[in-house]
Length: 90
Image 1 (cartoon, rainbow, N blue to C red):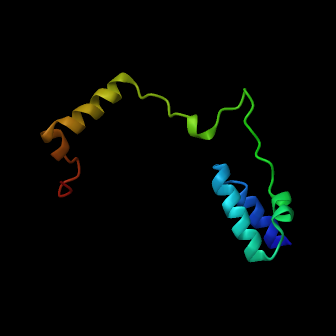
Image 2 (image 1 turned 90 degrees about the horizontal axis):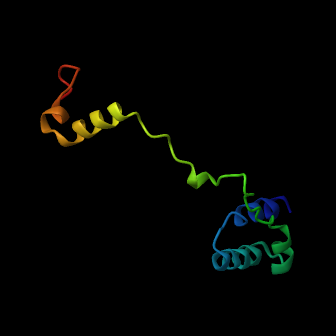
């Protein structure tokens, strides 16, 4: 039962409902457990509340303007790309 619970927790992370149904039936068959019994072990997906931000939507803060311009220079200018402050590392 412990293995079934751990696998049910993993199956609960599958986002696509069709895929989750297929994985549930395959795992239940391999464990020798009935489909409805195994489905009962899968935790219900908790939807984020209005106040919570999903992990995928978190964005790093923008760099300061000077930093962004220096990055663009380093990417676009051939001489800047070849520059190395450490001798022998170019």
